[in-house]
Length: 393
Image 1: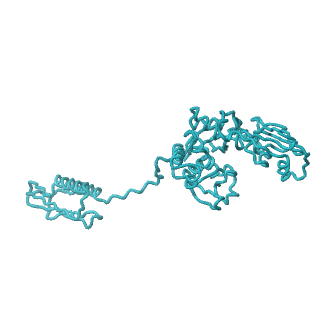
Image 2: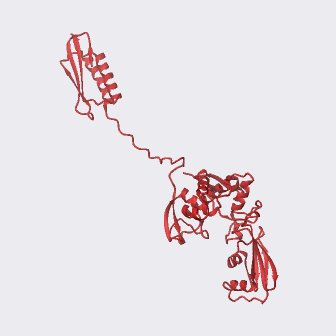
Image 3: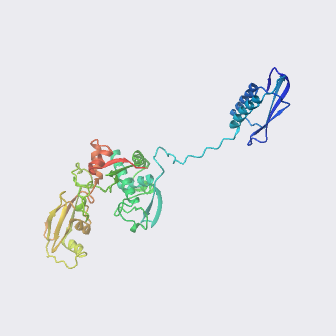
């Protein structure tokens, strides 16, 4: 670059960089006077040079002058733009990476993980929450159920798992320290994709379940700002049970009250009738009550019912026991039963519904979905007074 100024004689201004990482040294050669305008032009050129990302190792600017007397104030004015110029040639610092967790496909916050104990394999593994929930829904609910029912199940399963991760409910003693287990008799069921494809469905079914989980990602159920204990069962027989009628708890759980649900009689789990001999029943009862006495003929009587119509107390010979205990001894589907005596030596027991009956009925959820309920409506139907919301990050 060459700048010409009508002054007395030639003068050269050389700006030399020791390296591209160090500031430039300015050296004036034979310079009794330099035009401030020329320096400004020089500054502008160098600034433009850096803005285009070009390496600067040596720049030489030759100025032609014809007689000009250097003044003290000119020297001061000369130094000002040079100092300003240095601000543009300092190597910029690299931007530090953001410390905020990156979003992953739209999810809020980092991926949540939990430890899962699989008693079938005697193995504890760490799993991503959402992947684990897919396996739970696949094991707990038929894939052909309505999408909104599958979503409701996904939210309930996620809430159930997180409540145990946080230590609100259950115990990890039988899990060897793991957050949750895959035993449906203790926590909630789970199945691998490989096993599911062998036994229950195909790739389309699995994709249907994955979609229900993804569509409800990070959504949970709370009561008073706290994750609930979202118990669920297969079929309520038309009405759910109050939690206090099943477990020995001192206080009522507001969101686990008895609820009259939709008609579930069209589902296979709704009703089952089984014939028992009197001797068979006596033998089972004696495993728990060896000192009890029994007549030679059938002697069974339902003594009381719960508000939902399930057996509260039942007498067999000389023994009275809770309906929940009678169900366990005989391996019945539920405590909502009726008795029929085809002979003095036998009894026919019909059960209605499947499971403990507390919380959300899975068949009921499907029935409600068919009526137009979305997953949030279904959850609020079975869990009284709750909120359906995203996980607080």
